[in-house]
Length: 417
Image 1 (tube, rainbow, N blue to C red):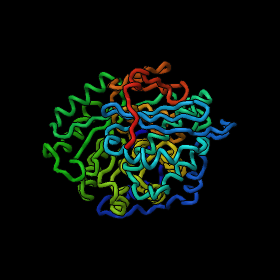
Image 2: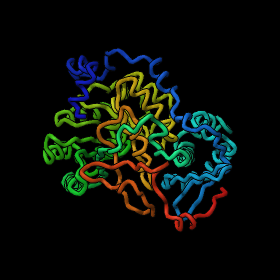
Image 3: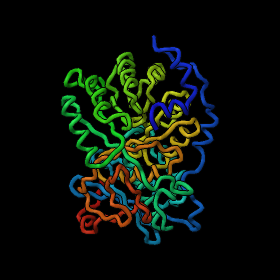
Image 4: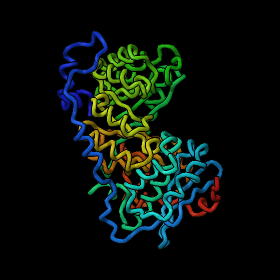
């Protein structure tokens, strides 16, 4: 979806755009009804009807080999599920999973996953740990349970969350992080990635992260027109500021992006400056994207209900898994917004993202892909797990659809905190 297509599908944006951009002010448009959002978020996510008999979790284990973490879930009947964590974060967070999360799930019926995700939030006052400290370990456990459940009914994870797979082939955008390089060097890298993968959409970084000074100075203003001119009108281009601007500067850069028909503008200011995000929304003719850093359901509800975000981007690791993220995506759908989940680096994050996107009714046109380095030895019988002609095939095997090499798993030792 191009900027023009998205705006054409969102006529409530037009009065503000037509009024000009002379000052910062909230968009004067009707807001979607919160009851509609609440109804969408309250629908069950896991298809419990697929499982006729209890699926009692006997053990939840966290395993470690060097800085790689696996979660293994076993049932009283001997079934097993496995997940690979976000290793960049788990190296600091593993005691939380071992001491506060794993024991909660043991003895529970995995068919009740929706309710269990809510229950662990208040267990031992875990809500005090909200954000990466709680959500990354929880997502790690949830992905292992979903792998287990998929294997029991011979279905991929996406079909556990939806009546059908909406996108068995996912068009991807290639993300590039070239902060600290010149505009010319950054463009060379973007072009090389596109030539190698056939991607029809790209995203690159602008500004300095979270108000850090931009290096080199003026890089973003040079790069924004250069990328469009290099790829022409048919390429979809996104830009991510990682909260790098103050509001007035964010608006100025957003208007520059509008001149070059950018597809979305991600995190122009810090993610938790909610009122200021609302104030700048609609002050540039580029869809506003955000949600990668958001840990709170009610903050997502506000951002969607108040019409702040045009593109909603929960990170399924950072936000605690697919159940919670699907609730956010469904609120976005109820408000007429698209969902383009953020993907965390390391491990199999891109695999879990693919399964999640396959079940979205309001998936965006392109989704983030970070290079599959094969640092983790696994086999996927139903997909190459590489990008070909700009698309990634979602695995259709049971559960996560991949088999981690048994010898590699055996190198891991049980983590006891």
